[in-house]
Image (tube, rainbow, N blue to C red; front, side, top):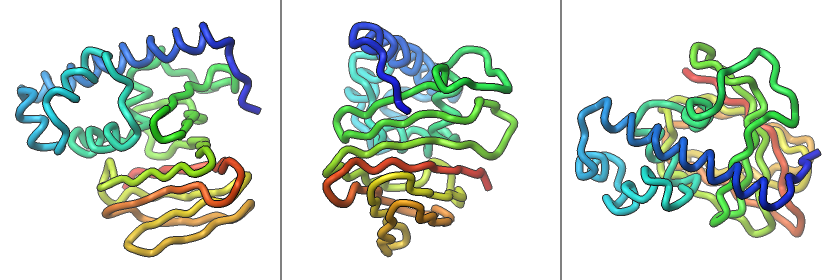
Length: 198
């Protein structure tokens, strides 16, 4: 289901997304009149890391993007959709943007056609064996999430409670604080995440 592009094309596409993402992050900071120091204080991310992300010298991790989304008051999908081409009502599987956090082994496919005025979206996620991602805060407080596991096993922790999900299980939650997603067992976890803005 996840057709792979040839390595050279895939690397070029990733570089292109990282470049556009860096520019958008710099725009968001400039729109607020913040210095790198201001943003570092608000996000808890070092000035040097922020600077390198804005210049696309590094590919941001999921945790780093989540912190920035929290500061800028938008979901990760919305931020990533802002660096994509003009949105269309139909998004074919081959056109759905894929973003990879190579550090954590997390791959994220934006399934829904992006639209800034809509509140709901679908994301397909994959966590490699042993992957463990912790978010220190939601991108938007009170965000509603539905996690539906398609393959493998997934541990989702919210409000200090871990929910162990197997194939076919679905968890609904509102996100107010820290969350954690981890792959359980000896195979990759693949899941659908439905996100609804409050």
